[in-house]
Image (cartoon, rainbow, N blue to C red; front, side, top):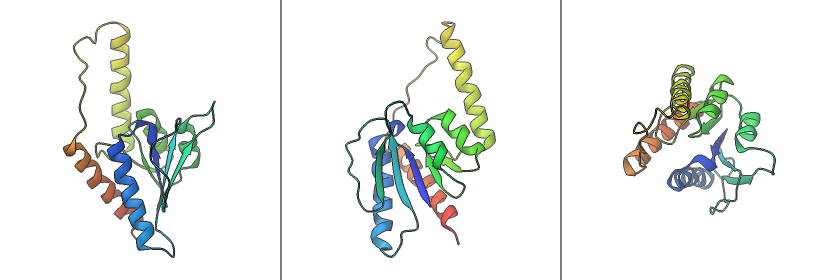
Length: 159
């Protein structure tokens, strides 16, 4: 099984959480880890590859989203903040979570995509002033992500 991380969209703390879990799995099962983490991005990241973790920068002219969507298969897990990518992944029957612990389903991703598109329309019309709010990312959000990540792994790795 592969955990595909849309690394451009993820906070460093989320990438570190995924890396720690993948490295721990690689050390625990040297004869064959049950999963590996594959970080895909459009730019070089500061993290270094290691046991259970691979970092890939896609070539110019390609996108990390397209690379992940082309290679993720049912039984894998995709971690992304990108709602259009999540929609593509869920449509393909692949498990997907975001960095705040939301597990995407066809219904939830469709709803979020609709809200995203509606907000974009309001912004283009100049009607969204004061409606945007930046949600910070802290320990609470990271804990929710880590819990959802562990739940997803347990479900996908269940024999």
